[in-house]
Image 1: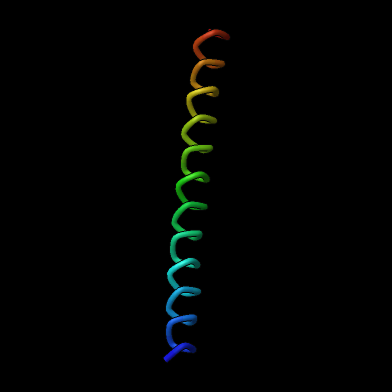
Image 2 (image 1 turned 120 degrees about the vertical axis):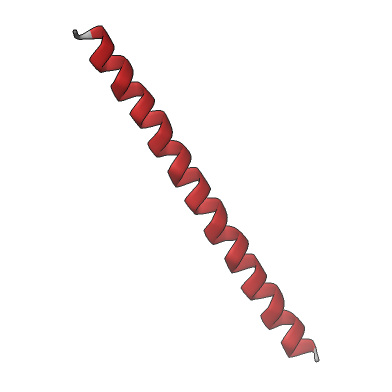
Length: 44
């Protein structure tokens, strides 16, 4: 029973961590694309 609980907690933590990394990665891409669009608008 204890082993199953630990396994469940580890898997849940891994899922949350993976989702958080993807969210931060996507946010970084969004910010980068906004910066690039600003650079293009300024350099016209």
